[in-house]
Length: 181
Image 1 (cartoon, one colour):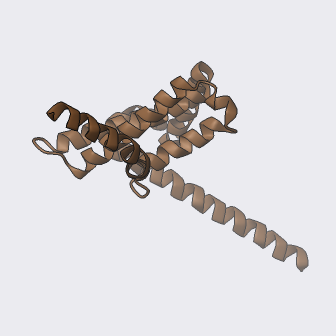
Image 2: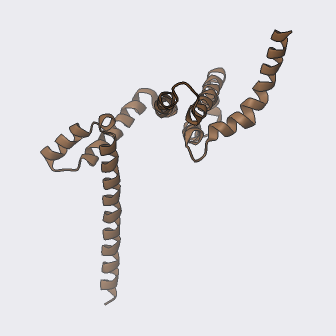
């Protein structure tokens, strides 16, 4: 009697886990269909038809292989640099295209991001040992980069207003005053 309760519990956990995996596969599948040119949807669909395995597995496998290749070539520095560049560059281009003739709110967010990201990049060039001084530097940098550009945090705006603007703007105002004299 006692063992059957435990067996049902294990079966329920397996069923729950498989349900979660299926939901995840379905959401990745929807993502692939939503961005067919970026995700090479048709190529993965052909693989799915040939093998009988979901295109999601091939897509995720490709992401892992790409990640490992990038890591082997340039380590975590290259990964964080790409994390800080690829998506923000894409979103910057989109906001520029959306705001022909004016500056959209998105363009302001991305300009702010690039100012802060450039500041971090220059700081790394000036202090190359930063990665050795700060524990888990590239993990922290990756987290910071995503925080800077994630729409829910708008971290770039916070850093710009609290740090960059406070320390740089006063110098710019002094330069303007000298030029107008």
